[in-house]
Amino acid sequence: MKLENLTKREKFKLLKLLGLFVGLGISLAKILPIYVNSGQLPIWTPWMYDFAFENSGTLLGLWYSSNSLIPVCVPVESTYAACVPIEVMMVPLFGGVAWALYMPRKCKLTYSIVDILVISTFGAFGEFILIRYSLMHYLQWWTSFHAFISYMGTWIILHFVNYKVLDEP
Image (cartoon, rainbow, N blue to C red):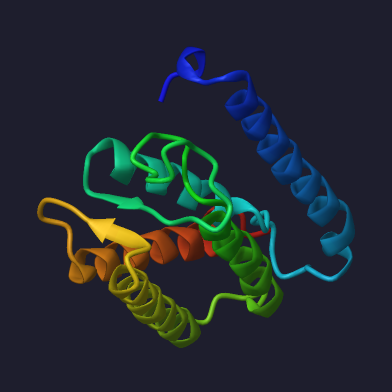
């Protein structure tokens, strides 16, 4: 999607969307640190990672979302980069907040393994449900198994960064 091809109304929608996300991010950054003290990994990290991952899959032609309740792009099919539906972006944003709230301060390997497996399983299952209701579409060789593996990889990276890279000495 190229910005110069958008109508003024579509550009205004994108600006409103950007404003909404910036406002939410600022609000969460100011309010939640009072409650979230489980490490140094910012609560919006899963959200940013998911946005980049969703767009890379769309650009590579591996999946796309459709039938959004709050369409960001026209046509409603999100086959263009940066057209991840708002409701899809809200899941990792609020999921990241919840994740930051329940993460223990110190690394516990068993806890991390269970956390990674549970999130990967339910993430892939959630995508399966979205596909059944024609809200998400896999293309080419991408399957639910690949989604499960990518969720595992994502959460392994997040656990590693949270406990090894950002861990206070």
